[in-house]
Image 1 (tube, rainbow, N blue to C red):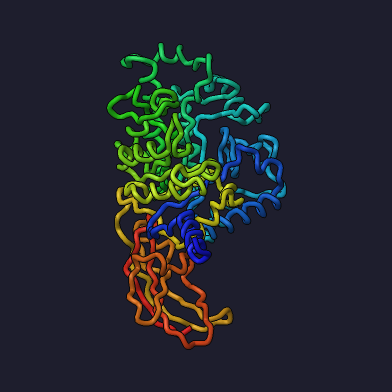
Image 2: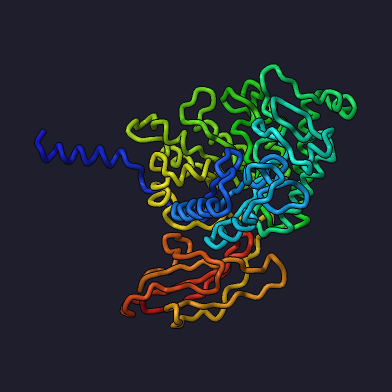
Length: 499
């Protein structure tokens, strides 16, 4: 082979090894979980934690993330000012001790996320009352005040789902968060009944004997207890702020085929339905949740829980509500693509996302792994998969009416530079209120197509936008639309400028 042909062959091999450019989606949920229960913020102090979160949010914004799921209640405690539950030890190092200098992490995160055009979803762990690593509870903690409401299990304390008082308590806490903070969503994860530990039984037989009449077995009764809670929490949120999205992130396997031959996935692992007593598909079919994020953390080719098998299963069976996929960055980066061992599995997984029309987005586990750019994951997000901004997926079952369009769009010189200004549309109720604006830019003679996200140059809460003025010799058309709380988009207004 000549040198020339060797060069061409090497170049071709390199191109085949690189992931293809991902088709841009105008609407896509691009989330990232920021958790505290791993201790990453414990005792960090106000200034350092704010600096850490600022850096993470800035990097995630560059990666294209448009929603943050922030853990604010890991064990019946609070990373926010609460009159119901004590300050979290995962914030200050001691449960019940307020941060000093004082700050409210949830309020701070709402402000910072909205400033960056991101949604903020408050993430609570509903039934977990104590983690294994917590050794002392504050006197105001629910397990200290009402020990009969919890049961111990493998080093944990669990709020007993059988007790109506616990379901009511969690709903009260959630309503308090939603009422006092401008959150976009309320998010719960996969902790319902505890993950089974070998040889340890859940100590609720007495409750079953006293209140389980009419149920064929204790499993059906436990599932019923969780079902009641999910519907109650959904109804609570709707009654307080109907626009707040209620999301659940279940374990990645609903049921294995051996347990449910007709509907189960071809997998062999722990099951939501049988082991955690969480009937996810029922909640979706009943409309009790607004979005679902199954944690499909395994790799393609995993013998017990193959990623490709599971993402196709969820796409088939869980599409009656918006479906986003929980992605493990570290595991994706660790394993090679079975069809191309020279690269990790990120490209192969995103091809599956794109091939399945019922997949409406991704949530990254976890935010710091993206920020640390493990396996080049963050680089690929910002240069390929999420290189253009995206609007949130629609939720017509909550609100399907677009707001009015902005008015009086004009370009003016100010002391801060050349600016676009507009006025918000009039609104009589929350469904009509514009909360964000999308700014598009088109070159001279370029067709105006607001469905192409490559033309989005900004998504902002403000009613102004700084233009990148150079010398006034190049013509552009700027287009502005309004978004309401459910990301319904108004008709467009446009303005021609020279930059």
